[in-house]
Amino acid sequence: MRNQILLAFLSAAAIAAHASTDLSAAPEIAKTNGCYSCHAANEKIVGPAFSSVAEKYAGDGDAVATLAQSIQMGSKGKWGRAAMPAHSSLSAQDLKLLAGWVLGTKP
Image (cartoon, rainbow, N blue to C red):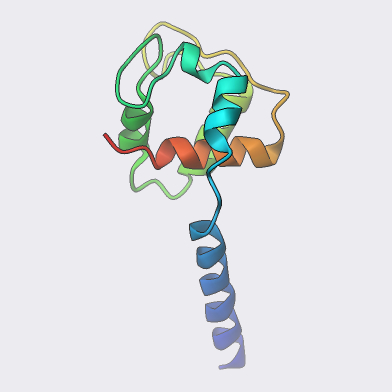
């Protein structure tokens, strides 16, 4: 019983931490790293709109990790012929922040 209470507490703490993540730095990180050269909030430029990415990954529990990996390593073929360049110099924290911000974009 004690383990179940501890597990419930830790789960609630993890959810609260994720929900309170401050995404306010993400637009500047996106700007600094050239994301807006190929993406916009609600329209396709070279790459998909951020809102289209959010829609594609809606309901995917691994979406933040999946998208962070795509940002870090680059990707090809997920959204057509254009390849997204790797952003391997971003920290793990910035990658997660950007991924969370993109996934929260509404149309």
